[in-house]
Length: 181
Image (cartoon, rainbow, N blue to C red; front, side, top):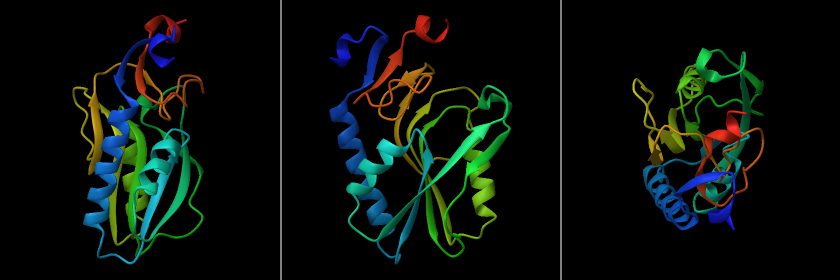
């Protein structure tokens, strides 16, 4: 059904490739944090919810899941102005933290979160993203990365356009005529 979806230009990452990579990432995180008592995973809403759910189901050591919601001032994050709409439920000081994002596009949101959360004195702060767009000048650290993708509009597996297409099982390029209307 996905292959024939009229709004998709092409599938970039299949459900099978996503599942395999998420499992690999969970194994790496589990290995890297095997010495900690508890890992605090922060999913960035709305896009990261599917990725975070699958990732944490593959982790077999103590971890906590929480969420933050952010918004940019204006119409895009290109402005670099980000604000917190929903914050964490508990302090993270002294905790080992991983920020989980669906996509690193401009890098503004992740950079903002790194600065804000570092100021809350975690024991360690790391980043995890399903996909990162290959863009000139993108300079933000991602400690655990699923896939690098071309600089195109993508949907599926949590990624959306106007709150649509999030639940597609793959990551696909959206046809330009859909988002340029």
